[in-house]
Image (cartoon, rainbow, N blue to C red; front, side):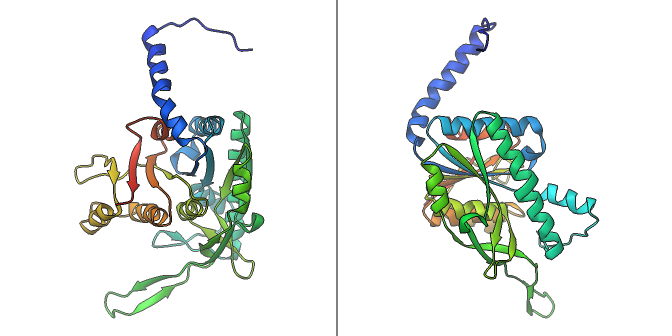
Length: 303
């Protein structure tokens, strides 16, 4: 049994008590609900942040929330490809994935990264199980098609990204079963193609598709930025799809943030109550978002 310590700062422990009191109505509201959390970026690379994330997932399950974790692993894949001297190329930010590369992608995502996260959650007192889209037919996928228009000839050509996929169908049966237990699913973004081939899928895209399939209350995307920023670089606390489209059109939302907000809007269109873009570099950002009035990032919900 842990030894009780004397309070050294009355103000500090009163502040902690106030935080717990503020969290109570949110815990009651979210109990029994499913939240899909995409975990990746900076938080995955720092051991302290990773341990805090694992503890937060255990706490969510302890208070009756059903967390479903989908993780990425782009930097780790890049490091392994470099170690194996396998050259990697990108088209419009997407990794071209041949058969040799997809074997490494699956090894890193479904192997080392997935099991490290599962082990961290278990070490924090939870019960986690690692999955990929191959397990129980969870993620059926098709090859991702991208087109690019030549600015000179105006001819549109199809880009071949190799074994890169996008979800065609999510079978939530296994996740629904796990929701009735105390087990936290941790999903690697690997899908199965029509002929049984392995397909590498963007983790944000998988998280959005899973959130829609399990009728999640919220989709949370952990990123390396505070959320959506306005023209002055200040965080936008809440958006609707209409406002998102306006900000994309005027160039306020640009670059890598565009596919993230599009993933959020797609999830909302398919029944998810809201989607949040959160800074994963902030310790306990998920708890701040779910259990405080102010939240921690940019919330996008229906018009």
